[in-house]
Length: 268
Image (cartoon, rainbow, N blue to C red; front, side, top):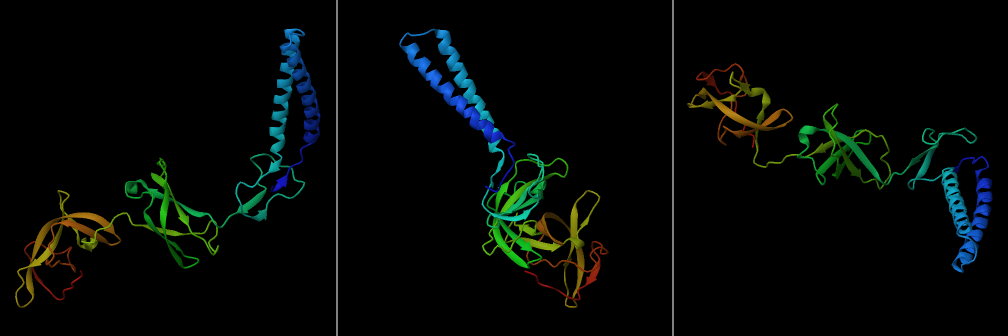
């Protein structure tokens, strides 16, 4: 029990109604025994029954209203702030009274673009970073909403946060990383060197036919791209493991042009 609201004499009314209910019950039970013994009229029995049931329903309804004058904590926690002072007029559902905080059962609610719906599922590993605390946590996605917000085309997820030290507070800003795709054999190249022709095909240039003077011929090849990671994109088709890609000046090279290799990097 957190607080009680002035019932305006309701408790006294309930006490009086319970006395009347007790009398109505005694009268009904007496009339019931007489009726079972074939003594008295049926109308007297029915009237006593109706009076008793009506009084009982009235007491239950009044008791339900009275129970609303007690403010019960919906969960265990600590009162962080008293918003409404004693003696203030309040209304049910519209007047905040306390701020109750529980730092044990913390969670993050985030909105994720609908394009990740098939990849972000309950149980997915999530990395959470709190900039203010400079702290990283590894946890899992707990819940995924079944509703797409039509205004921003996102769905909500909940991520449980362990808070044993209770230093993570409500409304703290956090950055979330969720691994929606993994491929240990993926080949990544910079997005900046990829061009597109009039047919919508993406292509890059390879350095081929390299002579002893490190001179080569630029060869245009069509590629198929996959997932994007930062400034890099995954190549699904078109590249072999030993291919040398033209990086610097890739946008200005033409197919069949002679190029000079000044430096090579082997990024595995």
